[in-house]
Structure formats: C-alpha cells, structure tokens
Amino acid sequence: MKAFASLTNRIFFATALLAIVTIAIAMYIVNVAVTRQAEGELQHGLEEAASLVGEYRALRFDHFANEARLVADLPKLKAAVDTNDPATVLDIASGYQQQLKADVFVIVRRGRLLARFGGGDISEAELLAKPGLDEASYAREETAFWSAPHGILQVVSVPVFIDRELAGALIVGVSLDSTAAARFKTLTNSEIVFGARGVIQASTIDGSLWPTLAPLLSTRGFTPSVTLNGAEYIALAKPLGPEGTPGAPTVLVLRSRTEQLRFLRRLHALLGGIAVVALLGATLISYAIARSVTRPLGAITATMREMAATGDLSLRIPVPTDDRWQDEDAHLLATTFNSMTDSIQRFQREAGQRERLSSLGRLSTVVAHEIRNPLMIIKAALRGLRRDDVKPERVHAAVRDIDEEIARLNRIVSEVLDFARPIKFDLAAADLNAVAADAVRAAAVDGGRHPVRLGLDPRIPPMTTDADRLRQVLVNVLSNAVQAVDARPEPPSGDPPIRLETHRLDGSHVVVMVRDRGVGIAPEHLTRVFDPYFTTRRTGTGIGLAISRNIIEGLGGRITVTSQVDRGTEVRIELPLQPTP
Image (cartoon, rainbow, N blue to C red):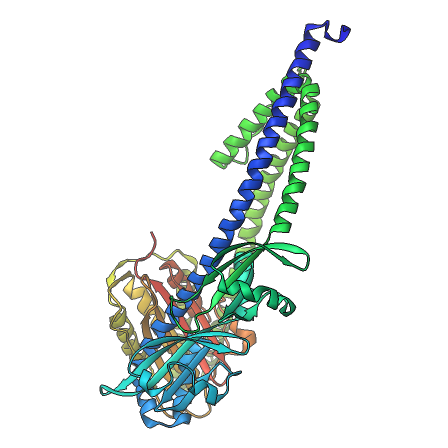
C-alpha cells in the first residue's frame, strides 16, 4: 500500500475520511431537522396568516365603527335625517361615504331607507330585513354579519338621536369578498376562503373546488392534508367573529405542502452535492492557494472595511512591487479597485462642478427673466421724461411707475434670497387655531374681498412650531384662494367661497385645509405649482408656493394641492405636533 507510505498521504486520506463521515452525519441530521422545521414553520405560517386576516379585519371594522359613531353624532347628519327626505340625506351621506370609503353605508329611519351606498347585489327588501335594521334595534349599537351573493358583510348599526329622541340608524360595514380574499392572499402568501354556516361565500380558489373545501369550515384547528387538483395542502379554519354571533364567518387559510416539500427535496439533494464537491475541492486545493491568496485579500478587505466605516472613497490598496509569491488575481483586483477609486474621485469633482454650473445657469435665467420686464418699464418711463415739453402729470406717472417697478425688483431679489438661503426656524409652543385665525385676518387686511369660513378643531393641543413662518404660509395660500375666486367670471353663490379648517389627524399630527371655489388649476399645471417662478398669473412671481413648501417641509410636515378646473382647489398641510429634531 504505497499510497499510505507517505505521512502526507496518510494525513490527507485520514482527514478526508473523517470529513466525509462527519459531513454525511451532519447532512442527515440537518435534513431531518430541516424537514421537521419546515412542517412547523408551515403550521406557524398558517397561524400567523389566519391571525393577520382576523386582526386586519377587526382593525378595519373597528375603524369604520368608530367613524360611524362620530358621523352619527354630527349635527349636519342629524339635521338631514330629521328632514326624512331621501334626496337631502343622500346628498349629505355621499360626502361622509367618500371620506369613510366603507364597503356599506346605509341610513334608515323607521323602516324607511334614506340613503345607501354599497351592497348593490342585495335588494332593498332584503336589505331592510337584515339584522340590525329593524326599529327594535335602533336604540342600541349592534354588530351583525350579512350574507351576500358574492361575499359576507360585517356591519355595525349606530343609533342616530335628535334631541335625545331616536331618529334612525347609521349602518357602516366592510366586505369579505373575493377582492378582500385576493388582498389577504397577497399579504399572507396563502389561499384564502371565506364562508359562513358551512357555505363558501368568497375564495381565491377556483369555484369548482368549493364542495371539497366546504366541510372544512365546520372544523377547528389544522387539517393536515387536503388534496386539490393533485396537490396536497394543509388548512387552518378560524372563526372571524365572537362565539355565538349569528352568521359569524370563518376564514380558511391553505398552503401547499407539496410545493414546500418539493423545494426541500431539491434543497437536500443540492446541499448534498455541494457538500461533496466542496469537500473534495477544498481538500485538494486549499493548502496550495491559502497563503498566496489570504494575505493580499486580507489587505483588500481591511481597506474596504475602513472605506465603509469612514466613507472616504479616496483610500487605496497598497500593491507590493516585488513579491515572488504574489497572486496575480489579487494583484489585478487591487489595481482595479484603485483605478475605480480614482475614477470615483474624478467623477465626484466633475459632477459637483457641473451641478454648481447648472444651478447658477438656472438661477441666472430666472432672475434675468424676472428683472427684464421691470427694467424695460423703467427705461420707457425715463425715455418719456427726456422730452422738454413733458407735463407734470406725466412726470408724476413716470415716477410712480419707476417706484412700483423698483419695489417689484426689490421683492424679486428678496424672494430669490428667501428661496436660496436655508430657513432658520424659531420653534416654540403655539396654538394652531390662533395662528389660522390670525392668518385669515391678515389676508383680509391685505386685500381679501371674500369672507373665509373658519372650521377650527378645539381638540388640537398646543404644538411646537414656528408660528410666524406658518402664518406666512397660510396667508400666501389664502391670498392665492382669493385670487382664484376673483378670476371667476361670476362670483360663486351660497356659502363663503373660501374655507379654512383644522383637524386632529392622529396622535402626533394635525392637518390644515384651505378650500376655495375658484377657477381651479389645469391638470398640466398642477404638477408644477411648487416649481420656483412658475405662475399662470400675469402679476404673479411664482415663488410663493415654493417658499411655502420649503417652510412646511422644514417644519417636518407635508403640503399637497388638489384641484379641478371650474370646481376649486384644496391645499392640505399636514404638520407634526412635535417636529423631529
């Protein structure tokens, strides 16, 4: 056995045999453990998916229930219900439905349907016969589940009281239909089935397989094996409503066991092959290349690590000039890396220079364009003053024009400076409602010719902000609203054409909304309203909204504009109660 005569060979074969046996045992243990873990994760994933469906459904329903309580207590809705006129109620309810976006929104009074949105596949007679719509149920809040041809509706019935007398009920609900099932499938990566009383109402699975799945709705817990179209699935049934609730639905969550195990089998085979190849390859070549590769790679890795820690892209890898055992690939990698860092440095310098030149060019173009018109007017006024027979009134008019254009030039320069330089904020405690009311008064003093209706939320607590900057933004927005209303050929009739409202958005944010019934903004202009010096008005500078956005974003908020031509414009400003440092 000359093969074992060498000590090197004996060590090699002994090490290889030990490695092969060890890896084989480890692979067997890993395969068993991975399979068991995959089964456990499959069940755990189903539990999480079912919990997610239940929690999301409950969260969404609770949200609509809370909103329904608020809407049912609004004087505007109560006044509409008190008219008992479906047309009046429908008009008011439409606005609330657009805000809530509930799947079902119904108002009834004494067995009469006053308004209805959603549930179109249920007739009016069937709707009035649903639980929670009888007059005996009006006086108390009730939750019910309604069966529909294409899904299940979970609704809450909230009483509407007028002067402490029961006037009707508001019903709001969410739908568990095929659309909801598809949404949950995307969130959970599972097949979703909704059913009630042993009947499947909606599912992401083809309807031809529903008879196979229907018996599972009455089970509780896991069903370890369900065969659908030749594939094996594991299923979990979970009720979505409180125990004993009539018509409470059940969600059935399914995942493919076949697909999961097929992946594991391929993975096991692949791991085994990789382990054998890696073992043989490593045993044959590791010792030969270790010393020639590890040292230069260590230097390269250390340089990269330092670069990642410091962010200095100018670091270079030291390259030895005369090393007999230097690895050519490592040398090539080091020199290529150094060339790349040199290119990055050069590109950064060139890009910075180009950006500065580009910014200077844009700013110069804008300023030149804005200054040209005032200068031309001043020049024309001065030309008229050169005549010997100029009349005094002509002199007065020319002086007035020059004074106005100089003021305009000063305003342009001031606006450019305000837009270009960083804004310094003076943060302090402020009352948002007081700031909004002060802005309305300031806008009226500045020439506002239209009354502004204020809707201030008294629940808004004191907030930390720069009150003067925020007031500046609101005055600018209100001035734009006044000009938009003035631009209409005929003034709008009815309520004041401009409204300013404040609301508590959530626990940490508030919102200010300014709505007008002016001429609106064309769709092609709406995306550019925040661009500096973009304006559609002859006398406008186009920088007010750009500065306003800088202020709002500097305060940690967000400003958006929506508009429809000849319908009006809405400016929405969201602000945090406490700006992030």
